[in-house]
Length: 156
Image (cartoon, rainbow, N blue to C red; front, top):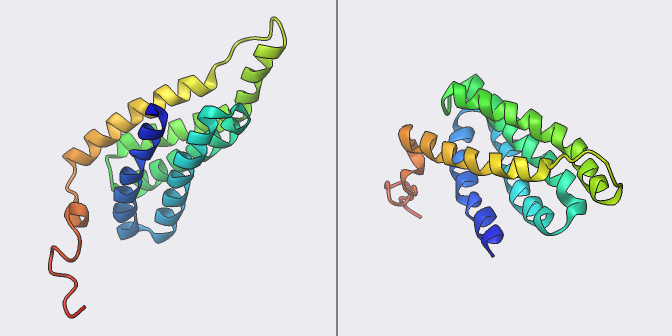
């Protein structure tokens, strides 16, 4: 239940980031939004099915890499946070290839333990706290209310 709640609560952050990203780069906004949504869906599935964990880590890496790169290039969020996010993206992509080794550890006695899944989920939790802080200290712009509340839907 908590896993579903946690992943589900990521969707508003993905939506807020989409609005910010769309203002500066449409292609980056689309890729980051699709990857962020995939992180929620595939990450939730990977939490209950170990066969999906490499895919979940790959889309997490794509989301982090795309968002971090976008923030470094456009300063939508602090550049340092963008560098950290892109770095985590690379780590998650590498983790997608290392995650199957975690399954081998359970099957093959003496195989070295590498719990990439847990490490990256802890990193995701810490990163989400950092994202919340970065969003709360940055001027938000248009996501502070709908266009209707700002008088934008006249004549509709």
